[in-house]
Image (cartoon, rainbow, N blue to C red):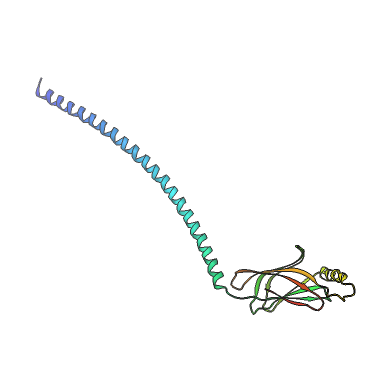
Length: 194
């Protein structure tokens, strides 16, 4: 064998060894790339879960802030509202007065007798010292029914009894309510709801 054959054989062996080493390195690199892709996919899934948890935490935080704002409104709204009811026998009406120097929003008044609503009124805004009129022939009718118990009126004064509920929003937006059981006659016409 000549020197050039030896050189060619040497380069051939070196080339074969280099090729085998390159093949092994390529396989190892492919495994590492596959592992890296799997880890990247898991990281993307974990990031998606983390984003979902962050979104939930933001919603909870928003709800907590809303509750805190509501509690702050309620604690800072110490205003007192006075409601008075007057019976007008001539028109068979109950007149509900806002006896306060403050307006009331979204006012709802329900008059019930024996747990049955007999009159209702809803007003978007009742100004300070404003009123709502609830007219019903049932008021006078109930008074006349009670009068029948007394005959000529010698034994007592006829009275009709009702439950009056007033619900409203204060000037600061706090929902408030008052309810009272009251009796009205021709002579006892004005009552306070407390």
